[in-house]
Length: 91
Image 1 (tube, helix red, strand yellow):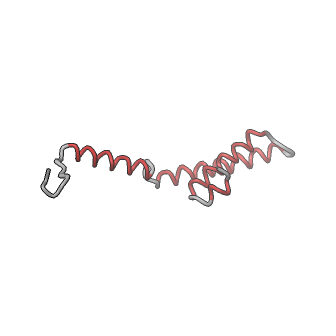
Image 2 (image 1 turned 180 degrees about the vertical axis):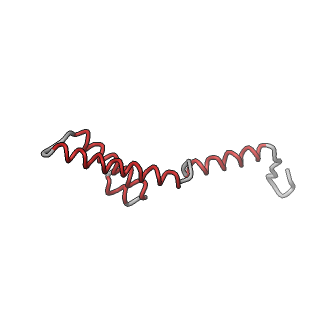
Image 3 (image 1 turned 135 degrees about the vertical axis):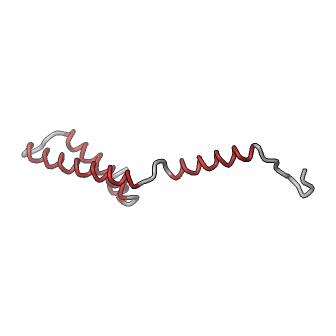
């Protein structure tokens, strides 16, 4: 996912994409004034990592899909013990 696509989703998705882009730039190596560029990218990466950690604390663990799966499992487990009527006569 591109950074542009990610920022159109959620702030957390955008920050994660930005984190990946910054890390790739650092890994690609310094260009021009190497020390200042690398230091600047590292500082930005550190800030983005902090923002991600702060937002992840606010987001409930698990995704919506995980939550739905857990509810379905609970519902199915409860239904195993229940008698289910299939018709108007109760049979």
